[in-house]
Image (cartoon, rainbow, N blue to C red; front, side):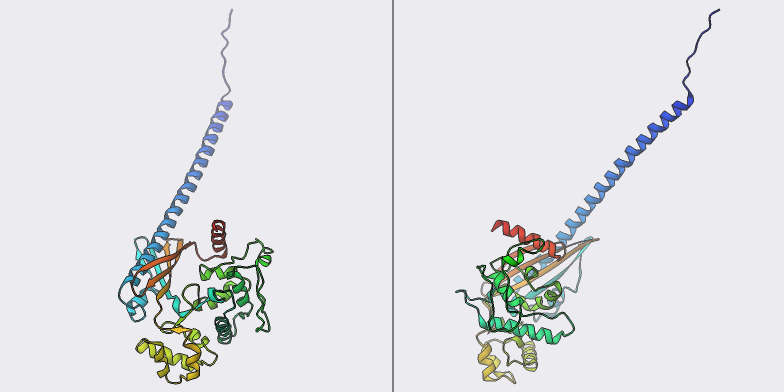
Length: 348
């Protein structure tokens, strides 16, 4: 008698094989889903960053349109509110805020040396007085040292010789590339004019806290003369050691009633002496040939933000408006600024 033999696979093996297949498919699907979500989030982040940049660009265009117009932003209350940085403008899914400051009312730190390379004692003394005024006004904050003055001079001049201000008793030495090359990470002195006041953060003795205190009084553009019609009280005080806070305030009160049409009108200001007038008449002006403005436009889209900083030159005769410097920042971090400086250095 013959028996038919039948082959049967254990059911447990089949179940294990099916489970392993399901697990493998699940792992693959999970990995694919994770990658897809990461790419989706990245794409959404890029979209929001682009929206923030577009909002900042729109704010810059608004500022340029205003500066091209006939109205004086100093005397137009609505324009001042719009360009003060305190008013957020809604643009689709994002917002932007715009801040416009007049650079002609500030001290130009690129001109601490004359065109022949000599120290400009008048402007250096003004910067030293400004430091004294800030230290007296904000006594509780970090003290601003005199050493930043020769350091700025060394950063902006064309040589590698360390400046020593013999007429300053303490902190009178600057810094050149040999100092900056020992930092981590190292970099070199620019040995040329500053592009923006933000670049001051790269200079010896200037911390973010000090820059926050002094940036509103400094500029990197203009002929060096202070426009008395837009200068702050502290800048007006710094014009002469004989200028006191009361006289500076009287000048501001007078220009709010009617801007000065000529520098000689300062003679009629109560409290103005001939000595003070003679001391400031060559360093002050009321009609700069070119007006310089710094426009800071910050765009926001959800959690992303972008800031555009632009320097604008407006010719008072032709009314032409030109963008002479344009920078994009993701915030105002030192690292972002330094990388931009390094990129600029590679092209010089």
